[in-house]
Length: 513
Image (cartoon, rainbow, N blue to C red):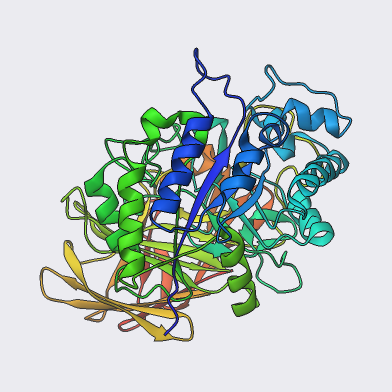
């Protein structure tokens, strides 16, 4: 059976770092990361920012030291040298400026993005003999990504994890982990049809904590980072206990459908003193899991070509986390399809809830698809149905109180079957599918309770209405919602923004639209 547990080691390289009073040695992390990769025979992807192409020892070092199993590719952030090569006036405070309207592609017009891409690829091909096959950025736009695909044939992309307000930009509500084909109108969201997708997979970076990253920084106050990045020592990739837990849960026995994915590695900006405390342990563990046949480690390009050869459209995948490293009795399931995402979450206080439910729509255009971002903030999002963070304390709550996931299994046809056993003994069967949530309760007359913090929703640009027995939403000009295909949606006890999602007999079927 093919191993679909995939790890990419992605180390990206800058030649300048103006954020610190004393610039760290930016070459030492690259040298040490190469030593570790060779020591453990682990393939790695090296993504170079344009300044690292034109100055410093990086290109000569990679050309001399990279084994054949490694690749060099593009880290697409705009720096002064790239702007000048493209004939564009540089507006940054320093030669690299991380503010959105200067450092990211969306800070430039579509035509300027093409000129920046042409300038980058020309220099890369001059140095490496071919265009880059892999491109990464914390945030890139559909126009740039499609241009790189159509003109230069890139094989894979990678972008940042979901985060709200971190570093001045927001990616929120998208395909939580693994990989997807982006819409031609929105690089952050999957397309639903083959005709509307850019046929290059985008892999989600950094390895987010599937239990606690989502709720960090409640109500959009700017999120801290809980990821596989080794510079985060308390919780995250610098903690051996957390790394063991993440790798065990992410690549465990639960159904992952298409693939289970993680990205290891680190940008050189942090300096080796911080990176080196956690990365050697991660490399040892990755090598051990590879040798045991638990994972495969390969380049981003290889993963992109594998994905494209196997899936004509974005497949279903899942992240199943049944053990809690904090020992606070939490567990969760992220179910991801090209139509949307659902997060079932065992809350220590409320029992089982739908903590997050987002709808994906390929026609929902990203905000700066055709114009330049004018400020140092931007927001890419999906169409929220339930948002347990931004609308805190909103959630759809199951009856029965505390309990446990008794079983989680692949039910066929891209559906996941979950059995939730309450401590009182009743069993609720949940069937998650690409376009519906089906629930069979242990007794007739049961209902889910949706407590919706409508003020929190309105603050984050979402209006919610109860109309014709369904919940209707309006977000950023888009009309959508969900209805009960079987069962009903009624107000709970006359409360204006609390709803009972009631079963018909023992069955409730909810569908987004």
